[in-house]
Amino acid sequence: MSDVWPTELRVSKDRHHLTVTFNDGARFKLSAELLRVLSPSAEVQGHGPGQKVTVPGKRNVAIIAMTPTGNYAVRIGFDDMHDTGIFTWTYLRELGEKGEELFSAYEKELEEKGMSRDVTEKPR
Picture (spheres, rainbow, N blue to C red):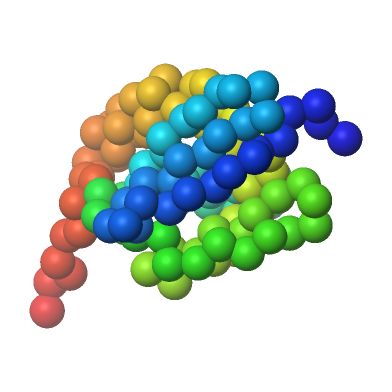
């Protein structure tokens, strides 16, 4: 069991941020977009090495649900109906500490693949 765990998880009124406060006093404001595009779900991470998916079009995604999962994690549901990511306390801490670096790498991936953070209309 980790020595660090959250003492508070608070979703902003606009549902675009999750603030996580840990028992050691560390506090992180995580965007819903960051949480969605770096979801620990198999849908995003894949089922093995090299299968990670770059998820575009989530700039304005919102958090619609949070469900405790045992004593070690929370399942977060988003308004695009993605709800399979189980965010452990350790992973939330990692996103808090390395979020800027990870999000920057995500933006670079988008650019390299010709994708955008914005929703793009599909041709009719």
